[in-house]
Length: 290
Image (cartoon, rainbow, N blue to C red; front, side, top):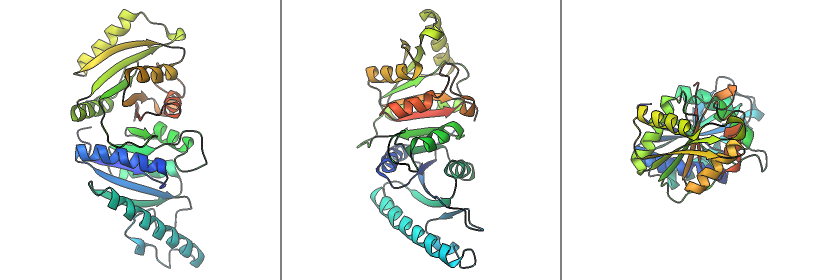
């Protein structure tokens, strides 16, 4: 990742999605990036229409839809247009491009990323509780597992994005360059300390000196600066990550994934989802095999 110029923010206009947008605006303003705000309408894709700019309502013509469908769709688009205008006005300090697409959420997000050369996805996240909605756990988890770019999930609203301490949990084997590059960018912009940590659980015991040596080698090869080396003992990996992050008072948790094959070697299973569901901190994930 040589640049971070385009940030995708999926939105359903809930408070959680606004929290994600606020985080995106804070990062975009520091990185001189633009934001692509995407609302996905949960209905079948109209004929000849896959994605539209929210300002191009005239793309939906009489010949594309039956009358009843057109009335419903135009109503939805106009409501979306009003809501997005309000957001672009509220967050006018950065460039925001607004889009609407239709049908399957995860598919549309991944297609949008490829089509528009997106560098980062930032999305609000409700976790697994709450009413069924666009940003309920299952949708966000699918995005985390399938996205070809880093995904930052955000639960809480932030008044100001000020990332001074970053936790990076890994086994420090085959860490994608994308992860290293973005972490270094964030560190440089915010003057952050990166806390490198491997969680040691009873089933994957490792001698501390070996763990320290492996993390040190990773830091040197990655040319990291201003970092700490940590090994942290806990019952499970995801609980260890959250506990370590709380002890260090970090502002951001980051880790790598193996997409649909499972979580990183030392974080097997659904650790990304577990961390995102149970921590109130922003969680940044990188797909190892993207």
